[in-house]
Every structure is written in structure tokens, then in C-alpha cells.
Length: 623
Image (cartoon, rainbow, N blue to C red; front, side):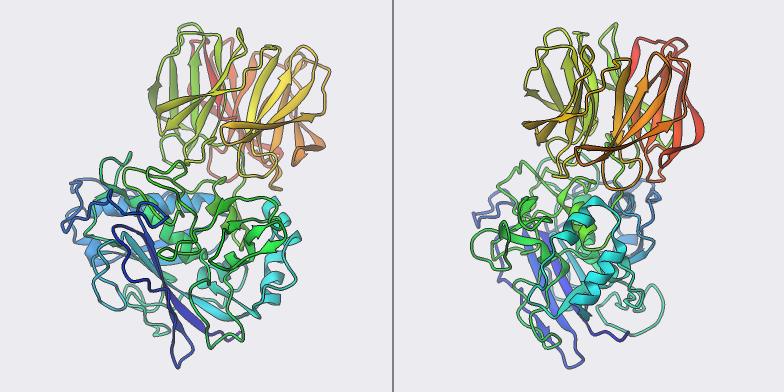
């Protein structure tokens, strides 16, 4: 298939006062156009940017002796980085490369697409295409090129064939018959993600297209990312002071090369009979059943025809209209794709953040394995422990199924409090810990910042202490984790449907009168995009899965029985990095620990974990 294409330049996460807006498309005789998007740090309401500090020097961190850590292998997607000499010759080369590799690891862990995205990375103060100096406020910049003559009909056909998650099913069921655009403008990487293998990477490090050649100088890239070398970067976390988080900026730019962005503000294009909508524009609404691609009023991302507002779109002319509405600094929700970034804040793309859901519905295959506890930022689960004799708490930081290190958490001497699950409740990309007091019925969240306790948020008290929290997961697909409850006295079951850290409503689950059964965690075991529930009978040793469809029970699948009831299921998560949830066991007689490595709903193999003879310690998640 012969295709025409354009170059898109996305200036992301910029700082300081607004320069002249440049969302203008230039059409060339060869049929491509240049598109520039610009975003700014600070407030997204055009307020003065008094928080911004622009440095005309190298980054504030001196990490010249740091070893380079390669990105971790993901669930299928591969992002291959080529580093420009502006990086490899820099005194902080290792630190810069590690921040980029960290961002790559986050993205690769999210998607199962068997494609390789080729990106050229620079650390410079100039534009790679125009060679002009970057504006004093620019933090990061990305160039990519889009294919124009991709028809709406073919794109929807490709999306339908590529559908793998519940988000895809919802989105396809609510797509309009047309979007006012004969053709859809997609990035080369997005095209390959939906099966259009002819949309190959053909960009050079200076923005030339179709010139052939080989790396590092040839036309072999999907995009170019530049970190502005004049800014006060921080390459390690937590980000502090006036510094900006490099990894978040790289994730932002990679999302745009992968396909996020809007045609709004780009003008018309000679290659399209009508404006060339980008895939994200299909999910832009101002109200239920009211699509909107205008910059007046408000718009938001919705995959169900405008009924659910996942996140607002930026409407400030100084920013990228495909980015999120951001709020003032410090932002309560510092999402990766916010139009305006703040110093001393950082975030990552997770399976519940708007970036992941948006990329999923435009053609990427999101990994939906349920709750994770990546407290250490190493793309692996951590096991949460609590000592119910002393009140000591800790994290086992895992690398796959291997214990990497132990990190102490704050002690909580009141042993009536139990850890009952983990999930990102406040939407900052960091897992939090659910607590319940089985003496008073008080409930709370430990809002975490990595491995550190940031603050405590009270949840509604539930005085009936026969009710136990039994796991977490996003059951109603609103992007917020919910909490599973079981009444150990009556066998009644329910879900607390959460809106961030607030209780939204209570939904009943089927009652299970046999109180020997307990829920032991939740994750998507059959890879249908729905969170499923693990059960164990502590009288007979029988085990099972409730395969869910949203908040409804679909079917029950038996798991292998484990008659030794000293073994308890204490955690559920992907521990071997295959994109499939596994089950962690602890023997409360011997202190032995193990993980059932699962292949969907089937047991694949059993792997021993380090024993912990002190049986006062219990794992409290992930689950």
C-alpha cells in the first residue's frame, strides 16, 4: 500500500513564559507536512510561571560514574533507542541513558504488541530539523511522521481485528459512523501496532524522510526525542527542588511517537479532503453523545461515547490540544501526558492511567494483569509484609521471582491494623496500601511515594468487623481501583467502587454462604480485560477463580487443590514478567513461601521463594 506522510514535531513539557504559538502545518510539494505542538511547565490556565527556573548549564546532578542499566524486557513491545553523540559524549551520559531506559522499561511493560519502535534520542539545546535554538521554556521535544492516506474504514477494520481488551470492546461499540474525516492520520508506530506493516520507520536524525541508509544516520526511525540540555534535569527519583523529572518527559514524548496527539490547531492538509483526524480525536467529547474537536468550552477523553470522563483535554492555546488538562503546580494528578509539567514532581504510565487506556483503544495491546506493587520503580512486583506481633512493616523488592532487597516501612504498633491490598488509588502512578482495623472497623490508605509513606487518607469506617477487605482491582473500568469485601460471618460479598480515594458506591457480588471460602486477591487471569477473583477453601484446600465480566460473575474455573491448609494465598501479581498474573503462597506453619507461575487459568510451574521462618510476618499484597 502506497502512503503519503507528514512529520509531526511535538514540543513537550516546556517551561517559562509562552513563546509564539506554532501549531501550524506547512504542506510541501512532496505531500508531507510539518506539525509542531508545544506545551509548558506550570499552570495550564496561562498564569505567570514564577516557579520555573531555566539554567543555561548542564544538569544539576553529577552522575558521571553511574553504570548504565539496560531497559527491562517487556510483554512484547520493543522500543529501541539510538543515542546521539550529544548524549554519549556528555559527562552524565550514563545517567541520561538510564533515565531514557527507565522510561522505555515502563512503556515496554504496558503493551504486548510484537513491534519494534525505533527512536533517536538527543540531549541538546537545538531543534534537530530546523537547527534553531529551542525556546527557553522547552523541556522536551519529539518529531515523528504520520501516514495520511489511511482510510477511516480501513482503520476501524484494523482496530476491530486487533481488539484484545475490555477497553477495546467498549471503544469499538461506541465509535461514531464517521468522524468528519475521510482519512485518519496515524504515526508509523501506531500503524504497525494495528497490523499495517507497510508503515515502516523512514525518518533520519535530522527529519529527512525516505532517504534509506542504516543507523545511526539513515532514515530508519519512527521519531526523534530531544531533551533540552539547558534545563535543570534530575535523572534519579524522587525529583526535588526546581528540577524536572527526565524519565517522565521521555515517557511523554514516546507516547506521542507511539500515536497520542490531536489534529486540533494543525490547520488543513492538502493530502486530506477534510481535516485529518488523529486516532485520539475519535475519543474527544464535551458531553455524553457530543463529540468535540474544538478549543472552546471543555473536552475530555471518553471511550464510551462521552458517558465517562476519563481525563480532561488541554484547551489552552499555548499547549498541545492532545495533552491532558493539568491544573496548577503542584498538580494533584501529575499524569505523564499533562500539557504542563511541574518541577519536583514525577509520574509514570501505568495500566490504569489515561495514557495507557488511550493508547490501548487506538491500537496498542494493553497488559491488564490487575494490581501491581512496583514500589521500587523496577517494573517488578514487591511483596508487602507486616509482623502481627511487633507491628513492623517492610517491602520485599523483587526482581522477577528473586528477592532483591528488603526495605523497611514505618512500623504500625497497633496490630489490629492489617494490610489488605495494594493499588494506585490517587492516580500518581505509585501503588498505595489498603489498611483495615479489625477492632474498630476504621479503614485507611497509606498513600505512597515509591517506598516512602507520603500521607494517610481515611476511608469510610465499616464498624461490622465481620467484613474483611480481600483485594483490589478496577472492576468497573473507570480507571480507579476498587476494593473487594467479604463477610466472614454471613458469606455476603461486595465491591466498594472507588473514585480515587473516595467511596463512590457499593455493588453486591454473589453471596458465598460457605464461609470456609475466602477471596485471596484479584487479577485478569483469562486476559479478557476484566479483573478476576481468586478463592481458597481453608477447610478442604480447594481453589478456584471467579472469572468476572465487569462487576458480574461470568463463570467459575477450578484451580489445582492444595490440601495442606497451612498454605495461604497472600499475593497475586505477575512475578516472572510474562504479562500473566501469578499466585504467591505462604505456609504459616513452616514459613516456606512459593509462587505458582500461571499460564492464564492453568498452573504452569511452581517456584520457591525465600523462606521466612518467623510466621508472625504475613504478606499483605499485591492482591
